[in-house]
Image (cartoon, rainbow, N blue to C red; front, side, top):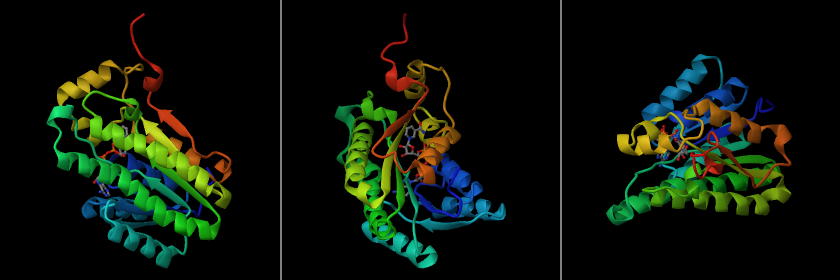
Length: 251
Ligand SMILES: NC(=O)c1ccc[n+]([C@@H]2O[C@H](COP(=O)([O-])OP(=O)(O)OC[C@H]3O[C@@H](n4cnc5c(N)ncnc54)[C@H](O)[C@@H]3O)[C@@H](O)[C@H]2O)c1
């Protein structure tokens, strides 16, 4: 994969999918900025990468906070002089039926999952336009197609796809690609911490009958991040074991 010596920032990289994306990119020669709202986790991942002789810098901040995001991108510019790859991965979920959703839950999920991606795209685009080069990869979810109990989450992830398609058009002339991955069920704390009943219901609808791994998503992220992927923009790859194309499992 041609990402060697590129500077990449991965949000929410202190756990799950983001952690594996950060480690995969570092292993393949990129310098990785490991962001997470949880400083301990961000530091742990960055340390594990550097212990392997690869390059990483931890930066803890909340991606929904504009001042903190501005500071993070300033640090990246001051330290490395550029940013080549942004993976907007930080995300949260809270499954609830529509009547029981608290206003604060709606606000928090939209703020982290959608506004967070907007703020990071905005800061990265300013630097990438100066370089006339960039790869932005936004993590949406198969759930944007709809899912019972996922009102806030689905709406936030649908917004991510609209954001991606719009920015892809706006930034294409600057040789900046903006693409999306829509994962299905992936084995991370975000899924394993869901109520048992919700997990069982989700698995019933899984065509492969298997659960995906973070490395499945890292593989897609590397595909988009590659130097050679410059003609791919505004696209959504579903990495979901076929769930996005199934309406029924009975024959
Ligand atoms: N696991 C799945 O089944 C699944 C399916 C579809 C999409 N996704 C998406 O993949 C992405 C990664 O999820 P995951 O499954 O690895 O979850 P995870 O909970 O393991 O990791 C998410 C990370 O994001 C961090 N984070 C949360 N809020 C943050 C904020 N405001 N600022 C910075 N970091 C923050 C968390 O601390 C955590 O380390 C999310 O966007 C999620 O919506 C996951």
